[in-house]
Length: 546
Image (tube, rainbow, N blue to C red; front, side, top):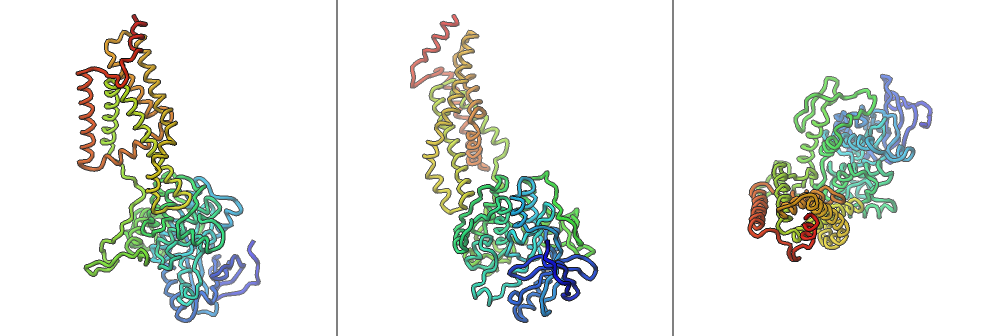
């Protein structure tokens, strides 16, 4: 229950109840002259500063008032020049994420996806107005129904006074600050994306990604990128890993997060944050990137996809690179925002580069044909080769899974890929039992097919029986028990081999020529069981049939 206080007035607003307090100031539920309920934040003197700080606050509030979204508590009014400076925002009747999780437990399932997408949409709206939040954390996110509403956007920027920062006053909460901020670099929209990811981890697990302890220890883990994402659902964890990347240039923009979350759950409804005096409706057409579409009532209306594209465009062109990751000056004298090609281009993650379907189908068809012809020509050698290849594919899948697990548990490190590659021999040893089970069952089934065929028919061509047995064995290797890792590793190999252009043609041609060559050997000399002698079971089975 809000703490009741005697009714007083600040400007034209009547204070009704104190509903919160923090480092920035005291928040009251208030009544506007027109009868609306609003939230009024009475700012502390050190937040505003001197006349220069008040003038800067007036300029910033002009930017803050441009933000119109159901995902943020919009700024309605402000007075930086009064005896008690204040900011008026939309009143959101809900618990903070911190209190919500403490009282009801972590957010799960579809609600977690709605939360993550809604918070990303809030950042899109804020960044489109060229405003940074810089203090996204559980206590600055209110839960209205099932949807998040971001509060205090831009207020942290208002308090960015040089005298305060030079005296060691840290703006933000250590466990939710981006590492470049801790290094003293200027914030960019990518810093808010890092805080988004840390807040999503809290929503999913009831703890921050960088653990607890003294602030110095937490900040050290943030700088080294050592986070713990255990408990974050698989559907979200890869996005969170990307957003927590230590290098801000390799993080997605807020708009990309919205697009990924929307495509990951297309069946989810567009979340609505609840009643508001100024609820912007979704427009049918998207505004041009980097622009806002004005509505008659003064609010800015745009659909989610349009906002996502605009935010991505604006953040990619307007972000200032922190000092430690600065882009070298161009030799032609162009400025960073003049369209010059940056020295660093982040690698999108996802999408994964998938080869064309026709090329993939041709690859596996020719591979299967080669295995069948091999079974009819050199069955023993083919069985050994199939086992080795299956073990290799399983090892590749295991390596990727282990690399992903490492990054989930303790963050992205520059030597992750090298360490995982060095461990490949050990990963292969760990996968031998599963490979034996997978290939062993396949060979057993193929052998049983040959035995039954010999007993029930009078085969005139052992090569045909061996080929049919190879078909059965091959199907079990790919789709039989313990075969999932074989398919996963096979997809990785296909993405590597089937590069666009001549590379794909060369791979497919090589497979086709190998199959035809082996078939020619089969037609010339017949099946060979080397290094074993002629199989004794063939004569025994023929005697049983005769």
